[in-house]
Picture 1 (cartoon, rainbow, N blue to C red):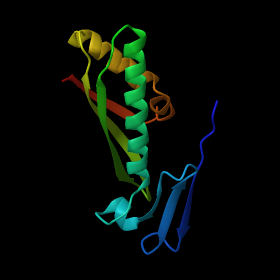
Picture 2 (picture 1 turned 180 degrees about the vertical axis):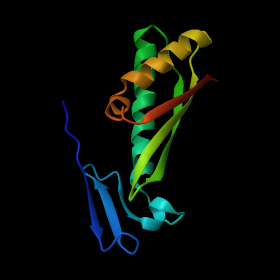
Picture 3 (picture 1 turned 180 degrees about the horizontal axis):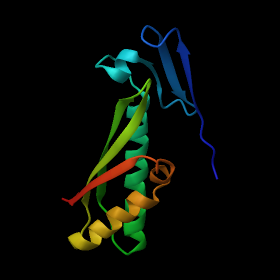
Length: 141
């Protein structure tokens, strides 16, 4: 299987420094800072990138599970909200909420909810993030 790489460089101290993150594919190359991470400054931050990755992973996992059970998903849209809180002298990611809306013809809500929960437990990023509480809000279009 594939090994994916990304890199980050940070220059300076915590509050006055700046950094950049890049993916090996070149799809992402952008800056980040204390302000973009803990305030409302311009740039990205690790939690936003983690949320994007988790939303993508979850949407694919749910689509795959539905397809394996004979359903034909038209679309799965997921928003991942990653919460970071002060924890003593540092910070901790305390919660991730996945909100997904899916267009799946001919599926009952009960069956959809079963697959939605299964994807939450089984997508590779959910497994990797098992130390964090992950909430799910799933609905059909």
